[in-house]
Length: 534
Image (cartoon, rainbow, N blue to C red; front, side, top):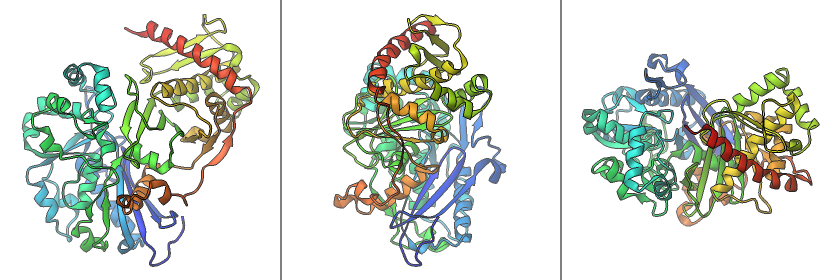
């Protein structure tokens, strides 16, 4: 972290994530000059969250207290002030929020936002401003009936995906709004505005209701991703007059206005500091990684996530297509795989004596293609594809009950990356000359795992240290927002950011080996799906 010159401009990026609120400040040369955070569970114990959420008795309903997020912002800004950050140098700010969460502002809240007293905390003044105290978040899976209703109204799951970029998902905001209207009508009727977590956070800084941006808005099952406006058929299926509660969506690069006078008087922000539209955490991460057309980003964490920059969407029954947060004419695709690092750790424990060194040695000592052995490892019910259980196959495509430890290690890693590539290609991604794979997340520190990733994708793999990719992306977007209307492209603004590091290049034989193996893998995956469907 570098110290900025005394009078140089600063750009802030906030991330309202599930477990914490984080911030990064960058200077005009994109050097990080400050970072800070507030952990919800430990620093705000009065809200009694675990992992930032409340899991209800049915195990399906998962919520977060909206006032916790407000109080976290009070805490964070105080920490930043005590650390000596000069808020008068902040030229613009933006941010991100956990996707799919919704916030319900009570009637009269907009007046409260406009008349905030700088002598009081935000949390004191906004206590009575929400009709729903505990907000549904992305972990909630209690809206199955509403998903079925929406798909029926749209003409089926695939038709809904063609309109909104995704089939109906329980966590998506439109279905959560529909459920809340049906099950808690009094609280729903009290709402004068519905925000996403991202636009809620932007509203705090703006002192007025902030618009939902195209990119986060496309994670609601409500936005038509081609017209970039609310879909009439989806709105009507969700709630009457819903467009009035949502407001009109705006491009993700929009400057929403100057920061509220509350922040000018309480913290010393410059009155001309711009609030750039906030977006979802996944789109913000795409900006933080500076993903470009043709690139693919693979985040190797508890869940594995694949991000793609695509020009023409090919919506399917799996994965998600969002409007691109840094280029309104493009799209980003996202695939989430639940069985990521925990499954890798289980196989490490069972087949490599709990040692990553032995795990890596198994990858080095086994050949590309694993002499035809293929494995599917779904310790918990997978998202993509919807299957469960461990399924092993020999070179002749016959099911086998076990593999030797070394072969099993490679079967797991190859199988995971074959799956990532197969499903990425089904969403419209194709490997072209110049394609880069950007690896991030915990397992990206293991070069032997990344070598398999490079071989399976037949592309060089680069690593990027992005523990705060959503924050960093938000800070970059704040800077870009000031010049976006003039036509300056995002990549011109971030050209001085640190370059990713090359860590693996594909083996010369990789293309031929995995081209054939991918076809087999697709056939066998279909067989696994047939076996595990109820």
